Each structure stands twice: as structure tokens, then as C-alpha cells.
Image (cartoon, rainbow over all chains, first blue to last red; front, side):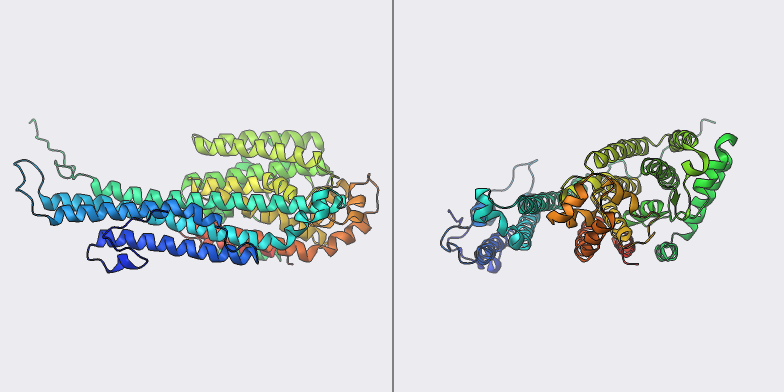
Length: 216
Length: 308
């Protein structure tokens, strides 16, 4: 997996000590994802209970691309910072000033970072929820994978119970995904709303105040 | 005790004046109905309803808006009470129930023809009351369609060795759809729809458990369900035992008292399952309501229904 390196030395925790808050923010987010991957590995290993500890857990595989994206965002922020730090020629007449550029970039980067953080939180919450669901069904689902059940020699009543348990598990996984997606949608809508309001241009005509003159 | 508890939650949520207003509106509406049906309507409407569905609408509104209950919401509360009574009248006919809440059912008192015609009259009146509330009209149409489908589904699936997941599906379409619509009428955004569905599922399950406990807790006994082989929550758990399943799936006239004992043995498991549904409801409320307190109060009130 490629780990983006914003300033040449990236390791967990490195982002928090940076001077540039935007770069630091993305690096911190990436660190959070790395921590999530470790947590997921630990949880998966404990729920497997003696399974192949060296196999890559599915969570880590899915978290990987997100970690890469966050690293790339950090690279992007760092590159922007370098650009602003370098001495530049005076802006041409009519073009925006450096301060305005800087503010505009930060205005966009922070919400993107916020959105990524929201998505990261939801994903971690989803994974933790999944682990809890599997944990709660583990004992009841044991008969499903028993030799008798697989061979079809288990009594009909046991097979019906196992099918019911399996259906409950599937429903709970689906319900969890739907709930997390709805929460994600809500949180992004709030961010969207604040972004829209932040970019709204003030009405040049001022407050609505109808100008009228008596014709008399 | 049920009545007292309903009153206390109304007071707790501060909806006493809204409930008084709703009662007044129903009385006024009945007084303005056709003279031919008025006696039957008075019999149905002017006796101790718990108004739990209107309370759900008010609570869902309060969960997203702190302001006073607006006219549109009050109107929805009136119509949900009308439609709920239609479902009771039809259920009583289908179940051949002679009594509800200790009184003769409408078809027992006035005859099946009157009961059927009155229920049609109430539906038409309900839509008239909605006036230009297009969202409300769509939601009430959805409700009537789903209730009809649920009743047929429940009847088709009787006396079959099904599971808890099947119970959940049937209950979700039956009582679940009623409370889903209440939630949508209250919050008007669809955010609380799942909460409403869970509240309905909880209500249905508590009703099932209360019936087995031999109480007329929610207005009906459980004899009809037992006799007709309807899949209740205790039944779904009990028929995991092949002996209980054989009795349950057998033809009419089997040993109902023996089957009842299997159901009673499963009550602790059913109560645990209801606790799980209640927790799902609380999570929904906390995740999607601006103010989850009224919704959590509804959950707690409903959960008590099987515990008396």
C-alpha cells in the first residue's frame, strides 16, 4: 500500500506536530484511519478466535484506499502551503490577491476534510456495528456451520431455527448499513448547508426595502 | 391501569390541551355526521380511546419542532384516529370478536352491514378532513393499502411453521405501518419513519405478549389468534419446538390449552426480544430526532404494555 508522504517523514502521529493546520488536519485524519485499521484487525482477530492470525482482515483491505486518499489530501494541502510560502510576483491588476487565494483554498479544503472525517467516522462506526452483530449471533449461528447442517442431516426443526437466525443476521447487517448511510447523509447535508451559506454573496441591494415615491 | 399510564405519558409530554382539543374535534365531527350512522359512530368513537396514535404524531412533531402543534398536525391526528377505528371495526369482523375493551364490538351491536358501511363512511370523511394536505393524503393512502395487504398476508401465513423474522415482517406491515405513517405525519420529512416502524413493531409484540399473559391489556384477548393459528411473537418462538409446531400447524380444534402452555414458557424470551426492539427504537430516536426525549418516552410507555 502506498503511504503518502506530505513532508518526507510520515508516521502515525506526525501530522499533529505540523505548523500548517490544513496539512496537519489531513495527516491526523490519516492517522485516525490507521488506528481504525489496527483496531479492526484486533477485533476481527479476537472474534475469529484462533483463526489464521496472519491473514489480512477484510477491514484492512477496505480501509486501505481511504488511507491512501487521506494521504493524497495531505500531499495536496502541503503542496498548496509550499506554493503560498514561496515568494511570488505581484498579482496582475484585476486578479485576486494571495491572501484571498489562501482563504479560498482553506475555505474549500476544510469542508473537504470535514466531509472525509464524517465519512471516516461513519465507516468506523459501521465496522464496529458489524463486529457487534456478528458477535451477538456467533453462538446461535454455530449450528448453521455444523457438519449435520451442511450435510442436510440435521432435523428439519433445527434447520428452520438456523435459517431464522441467519435471516435475522442478514436483516441486522442491512439495517445497520441503512442507518449509517442515513446518518452520513444527514451529516453531509448539514455540512452542505453551512458551505452554501458560507459562499452566499451578500445582496448588493441591501435589505429588502422597497423604494417608492408618492405620485401625488 | 393502562388508561392511567397513557394519561401520565400525555401529561409528561405536555399534550393535555392538544388531546382535549382532539377529543372536542371528534365529538364535533360525530355530531355532524349522517343521522343514520350517528349512533354507531358515537358507540365507536365516544368511549375511552387511549389516543396513542395521535400522541405519536404529536410526539414526532415535537421531536423535530419545539413550537405549538399546528393545525395541519392536529388535522392529521384526527384522521389517524378515524382510520385506526376503521381498522378496529374490520379486524373485529374478520376475527369474529364479540367484545373490545369490555364493550360489544360495532358489528355485534349494529350488525355487519352497518359496521362495514360505517367504516367506508369514516374513510371518506377522513379524506375530506385532509382537505388540501397532499402529503397527508399520500400517507393515508399508503397506510390503507399496507393494512389491507398485511391482513391478507397474516391470514395466508396462519398455521405455518414460520420464524421470528416472519413475525417481524407481518407485524411490521400491520401495526408497524400504522406507526410509520404516524411518524411521517408528525415529522413531515420521513426522518422518523423507521422509528415509527420500530415503535409499531414493539406495540404489536407487547400486545402479543400481553395477550398470552391473559390480560386485556391492549383491548383484546389472545383467544382469536390462538384459535386461528396467527403467528404472534410467543408463537414464533414456541413453534421452534417440533411438538409445539405440530399443535400450532394442526387443523382447528386442536389442544389450544396445551399450545398456550408452550407460548407461556416462551414469555421470558419474548420479553428479551421486545427489549431488543425497544433499544433499536431508542437508537433511531437518538440518531434522527432533534429532541429524542418525547420519542424515548413513547418507547418506554409502549414497553410497559406487556409488563402489567
